[in-house]
Amino acid sequence: MSHTFAKGSPELHELLRWWSALDHDRATRAELRRAQGTMDVIQLPSFHDVRRRLISVGLPEPEANSDRLALVAGLLSHIKANGESSAPKAFSQGDRPAVSPIRFRQVLEAHDTDELYRRLRRVLPSADGALSVGQLASDVFHWSESVRKCWVYDYAWPQKQSI
Image 1 (cartoon, rainbow, N blue to C red):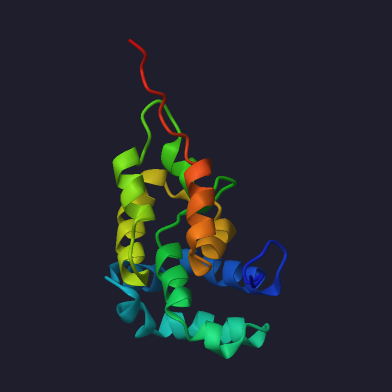
Image 2 (image 1 turned 120 degrees about the horizontal axis):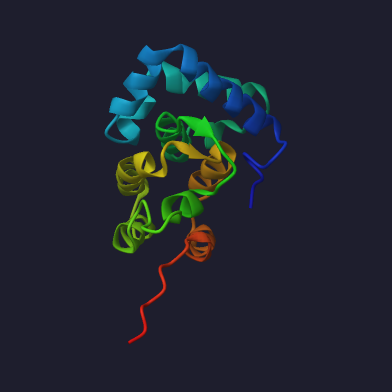
């Protein structure tokens, strides 16, 4: 598996610089947040900005031209603060999980990139906007059965009440 967006990688460093700049460009953030799917994202100048930046630090062009990168760019526009928690941990914190187990399962069962985009886009605000930007980027860029399993184990499933 590729190490794109791994901790300390030049790709992650550049992605974080791009994401941080969204704080000072509310119009661009809003434009990205309105995108309904990856096709909407790839038609935005901000996507091509991050794409060029990532290519300049070594991301291979086929990966930079993928729907996976559009997924990353669109979803990161919904993250307000870079925290320590993985998405599943952020979704399941508190007495009552911010994202219910049913809704979380729906995210895991997404059949394609656009469905994953739509489902995550709906639940990201539930995490109060603070989760690990790098971890989310890496997870959705490399979305696979193994990433889904990691998410299943990271989510704090509610305990069944005994009778």
